[in-house]
Image (cartoon, one colour):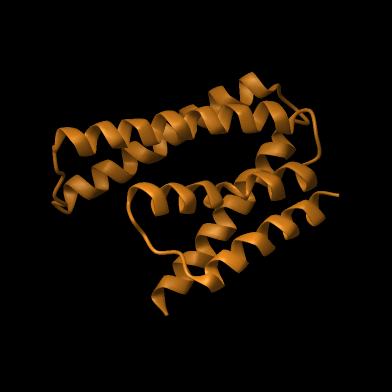
Length: 138
């Protein structure tokens, strides 16, 4: 049950992220949005890290894990920059459903490289998600 609460919170957070990003673009340029979003993210993430250090969470220093974490950040930043520039040129109701298909890339890569299984039901779900995203963006 706890996992579903997290799922709902993630959906809410990402939905608000897209909404507030589009709303901010009414008042500032994409470059300004990226600057201030980055500053905000750094401050918030530093607070989280300080909190984790305070509660003595363990931080691993495996070079492969660190490299992959940096690649996670790199592609997250690239996606965010491209998202906001594109959002400034189109409607949120079009862009957000289409970009919400990013898990399909994750599923495909996880299937190929991590050898994760994809069931028939999940495959049908992926196809339906693609159809739904296209219909939502029309």
